[in-house]
Image (cartoon, rainbow, N blue to C red):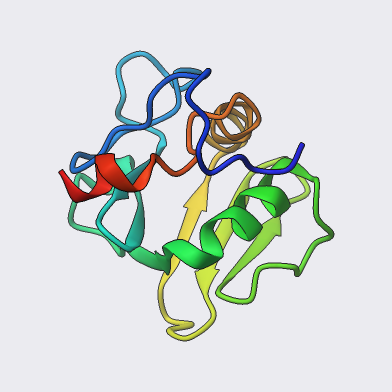
Length: 132
């Protein structure tokens, strides 16, 4: 699967608000959260209650990042965020330009995010939605 940045057949991506995968824990306190801004995408860990680090990626790099998350691109393909998969199935995300910013996810959190990515839930919305 290659990321489809203009998908309209899948769940609509949320613009201007933090959201998580529909595969995430229903109480929502442990998940990968994403926020689509005009030309930036922000990623955080909901366990941090908004007080932890936020990784930011330019929209032009998002599809490559998602392809690596989904396993459709080799490890190390993303030039802005390093993805490290732990032996237990959890994962860490580290911003390459600001290596002191790292997000760590449990196996359940990471598998929910990967499932959402594979389901198209994190595909970029169309330019019209971002501009609204």
